[in-house]
Image (cartoon, rainbow, N blue to C red; front, side, top):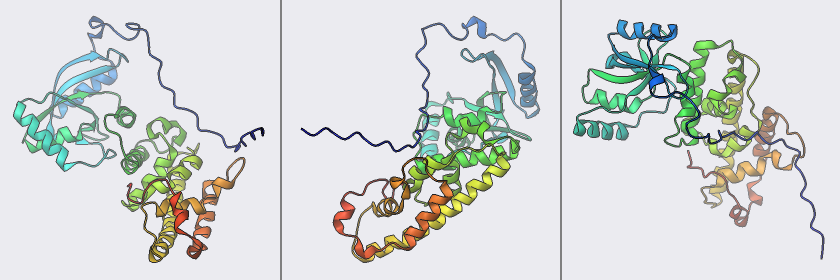
Length: 330
């Protein structure tokens, strides 16, 4: 009986696994109900209370969050003084209309939006766009809000909002919108300091692609970009330029891939995986042992291979093993 050959190691470093908090022993963390009472507001929360009143709102109360012990305010805000953050998913007309109908039937608004102070005036809601639009549709004058004094919660909300899975396009657009907001807020800080908010460097680059082309086939290129794109120690103002250059290279590459796909279709090949098939054929990473080359070098190689792609050598059975994201996934 032959001895099985040991699997060859690729030499590529795996991305560190995301850590999930361990289950804590019941009743060992945070505050008791009585301890959540606030006799006086911290300076940061006091400034927000004053802001609410200046904007025509009403603070109903304040308390310490039972888990993180942060001061929070319950307030009624004028609905025309609150807007969605500029970096969340696009509004669903169907969802907010259905939500308005449900609120109208119950006659009560029971799910306060989260709000933070906007940079100059008014408030942003990073988690409540559909509730806000539903109330506007009903003609409401005011809306109940949980006001968070810490502005950075607006950037963290992407990590907190897990109630509906994003597809790649939605997530990438959300991340690049956060990035644009951070550029206005703190462009001099290193990009690596915002890794928690942005999740993956590849999402920034793909987000730029989707900004330029809403139908960009990001799923075909995401495995490559995700593997090679890293957060930079450079300030955001410089790091974004690199993402934009990579995005331009991806869009140019996809144009070459589209030309190959058109030739394959002209020969009678029909499959939702044509793009994934072509990308896999021109991807040099599958042959590389050890440390992979930089993303720009890989994209340049792929563009050159796409230009030389000989569709006459492709057979129908070659497509049978094609996988990956179908052309319509985004």
